[in-house]
Length: 167
Image (cartoon, rainbow, N blue to C red; front, side):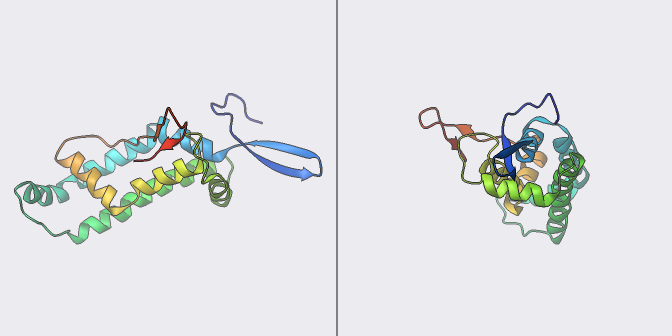
């Protein structure tokens, strides 16, 4: 078993009646990667810099009060962006000796638990929130117009209910 892990969450598997094997949680690892490692954000920022020029006219027209139409290249760039995010997550999971099937099964088992930042709901929400076209366009606007680097923010913990708040 690996040592020095930052999270205490685990998955339990029954090997035989009465025997419990505790394995490290890949969902917790992905959560740590998503919020604490710079690799994914650096890859996203590099990509945004490469495609920025294609978006500038759109956001300039929008800032001038116009209603510009989405360029077909935006969809193509969005698909490239999703491949970066999905590829990074896939590589991260597989480098740790897990399969995507294992990750998704554990993720599905954890969805609905709102008491820990590494829950399936949190990770699933975070992944889906940055892989929608609307989120991509919002991130592009922040990057192009406001010169803001991309960020991935975890949900907040409600002090009264001790549940995660997704916004």
